[in-house]
Every structure is written in C-alpha cells, then in structure tokens.
Length: 349
Image (cartoon, rainbow, N blue to C red; front, side):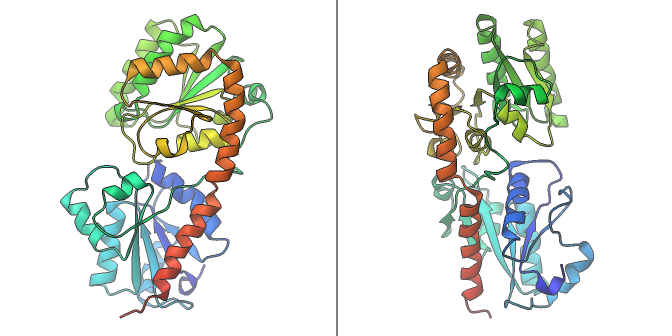
C-alpha cells in the first residue's frame, strides 16, 4: 500500500504473542476491508498489511483522503513514539490509545494517556481507572475462526490427543494466569474421573521457566503426565478449543482476557475467576464465576461441571449462542472505526 493511502497505523512493538498482539492480528485484516489500515512492528504474521520502516519518513506528508493519520497504540511503548512523531517531529497524526488495565496507572502511564487524542477502554472496570474521558469498546472474537467443531472427538483425533473428555486451560504459563491453580485442581480431580484429561497450552517465558518446570514435576509425581498434557505455545489455538468439553480461566489478575470468549465462541462452557471482563461475559447459562485465587472454590466448581453431562451439553449451546450475539469482531471494528471518524471530523490546527 502506498504511504499516501494509509490512514491508520496499528503499532505492535512486542515480539511475544500476547492478548494485545492477538487483538491486532484479528482486527486489522477486518478493518482493512473498508479502511486503509496497516500494522507496524516485529513478529507479526505475513498476511497482515504492514507499514515498512522505509515508509516512516513519508508520514510527514498528509494522507490523500484525510487531514491526518491515526496512530492507534495499545501499550506505553507505542504511545511514546506516537507523541514524539506528532509533537516533536510535527507529523500530521492523531493518537488513539486502548487501555485494558484494571489497576491504577503509574504516573508515567497517566502522562502518556493524557497526551492522547482519544482513549478507548475495553471494559467498564478498565474505564474506572482512567482519569481522562474515554469510550468503552469491548473486544470481539473472529467467529469464523473460533467456532464449534462437528465433533470434539474428531477434533481431538486431528490433534493427536487421547480420546477422553477434555478440560483446557490456555494462556501464558505464569503465576498471574493461575496455571498452578488449574494443575492442582486437576491433580485432585482426575484420579476420581478416569474418563477426563486436561490440556494446557501456552508459553512459559524465561522468567517463568522455573514455575513451568515445577508444575510439570508436580504432575509427574502425581502419576498424571499422560492425562495432564502440556502442549506449549500453539500457533493455531482454535482447534484446541474445539477439542474441549470444558474450559477453565483461573487467572489471579487479568486486564481483559480473550480466552473465555474464544472458548464460548467454540461452544465450550467456561469456569472462570472473577477478574478482568469475565463477569461481563460469562453468564449462569454459559458457565460459572468463582472468586479469584480461591483454589477450593475453583476445584469445587470444576468438579460440579465434570460430573454433570447434561449441564455441559446445555451450556455448550448457550455459550455458542451468547458469543454469536455478543462477541462479533465486526461490532468492535465498527465501534473503533467510529472513533477514527470522529477524530477526522474534528478541526485540525
């Protein structure tokens, strides 16, 4: 794409896979169907439209169709260069920031946010921690990518998983994500439920490698290494959701958390800790909320679901219907595009 045609840049300055990166990977191709938008940064998949480094100097020139371009940041490390380009280099830019954090921001982050032209919060909880005007736009899910399988058994076979009823916990492996809470629950429950197995996907970064190793050793010591399966980071998570009968999101803290949405879109009921946006998306018909960092409540809730096949079947259909009605990615894209349009309609200096 010619630089003169580009209207929106979505920077991604973190190489490792994260929820923010996943959002960009899903949203940008959809937005690009009706808007000249590009991603910018390392580690992005090849199918995304991208801004090349050599194109950066051309950002000094106004785009052909609008008075300014929009730089849509989602992290501090992306807000700062946007401010520099707009305020120091005097590039014709408007700055948008999406905040998912559910904690008081540092003084540095508050300063960066105060320099934005528009701020989006991903939930009402996130909005409560912002000290500037903002608009709440909840994340959506690619409902074509995340959808139920014709058969969970067939999905398991395609992944080379043993044929047992399957419970999953997906995401980065670390204390914050509560992976240890899930492992402890499985060690307690699987011996009494021989028809079930657990699957854990996600990456343990170098700083969490010891945490990961301790969990695997605990599973081995319990004699459950063949039924609590660590699959590492997977490039395409959708088939793993399709292989599940139940999903668990045991996070101790979460900014937003896409995994319960992805599970429900795949027709999988969810047991989730009451963190992030989970209380806004998990209903009594689609799953169950438990207090955060409460291993007893988590284990009890999982046990109840594992032992009630009729409840699982009913919640599977309800989860899928709820996702179709509430989580479409098109809704998120349209609401974000409306924010861009509002900025373009504002007078420029």
